[in-house]
Image (cartoon, rainbow, N blue to C red):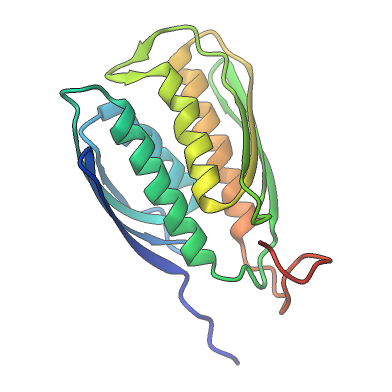
Length: 199
């Protein structure tokens, strides 16, 4: 039986605004340790990794005295970059994934294509200015930044929901489930594209 290569990545991203380090294993069990300095961001990224069954260890020291934007964006860019690196040339993956996830009254849908072409359409319909210490405008931005850095096409919508925390968490869980399906090894030996490459 041929050996299966590990799909892991380590990323360090250091700027004058943030210092992010992370280790990612796409074929993990959902073991997470996330410390960004923003409790709700920790919660959402933990839910993403847990339900995607990724092992994720992420720490960030950011300029939270300015605001939450740089930390949220740079954590997403680092995680997206790690997903891209761990996927390699994307040989043998399912490529596409879609999922619905409910959380009480909220229902979210995510559709993913590991196309190599970055695009994100995120419509969460959040009404509050913030959830905890995270600006609601940055929640969708985290998803879009992750998709860009991971070179994914991602469509994420919240279809129903009255509670913004429920809407945001359902969206991250739906994204996680869609990612889990899309990056899964499907037993094929080639790149799942008529072009022969996913770039």
